[in-house]
Image (cartoon, rainbow, N blue to C red; front, side, top):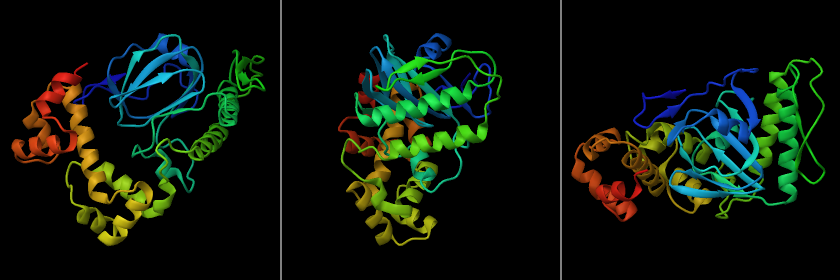
Length: 305
C-alpha cells in the first residue's frame, strides 16, 4: 500500500498473506508481478540477492546494474525506482526495523546512513554463504502449508525442495537467521574502502541522531551535545569511520533529502527549504548549490522522473 502522507509516495509494509508479523521472503519475479509502483520510499528494509537474469534498480539517483551475484539493500527512507526490472530473479527479503533481534551491531547495520545499497559479489564464496542463509530463511518462512520451497545448490544457486511438512514458521528462528545474514553482510568489504566499525558506538549513535535531526539542525555542536560527547570526540569518530568530520556528513544528509524532494515532488523550493530547516529560501539555494554544484531549479529540471 502506498501512503501519500509523505511528500514522496511511501510504500508501507503490507504483505498480502503475512505468515510472520514484520517479515516476508518471496521470489523477486513474484514480487514484480504483485507490485507496480514508480518512484517511492519504503518504511521497511528490503534485501535482494539476484540469482538469475539482468535488470536495473535505482536507489537515490544511482542506477545499479543487477545480475547474478548482485546484493541490493534498500533501507527505510531511501527512495527507489525499478528503472528496468528486465529478467532479474532471485530472493527478496522484506522486514520491518523492529523485526531483527537485539544484537551488538544492530543499530549501525539497520541505520540507512552511508552503507552501500549495492554490492556485486559475482560467484564469490560470500555469495554462496548469503545464498545458503537465504535458502534457510525461505525454507523456514514457507514451512507452514504446502508450497514449493527454495534451497541452494552447492554452487550457490537456488533449487526447489520438497513441499512443507505441516510445521508453522518460527518467528524466533527467522529473527536469528536474519541476524546471521545481516552480520555476514556486515563482514563484506565496502566498495569505498571505509570502515564504519572504526567509529565505534560514537559514530553509530551519531548516524542514528542524524536521521532524527537533520531537518532541525546542521551544527555539529548540537549533535555532540545531544549525544553527550565533546565536538572533538564526535569529530574523531566520524573521521575514523569515513575520513570526514561530522559537519560534511550532516550537510551531505541534508543535501540528499533536498535532492529527493526536488526530483520526486512538485513542492516549491521555498517549501522544501522550510522542511529542511532553512527559514530563507535564498540560504537554501546557496547551500544546495555549494553541496551539489547546481541550483535547485537546475537539479529538478535534469532529475525529474
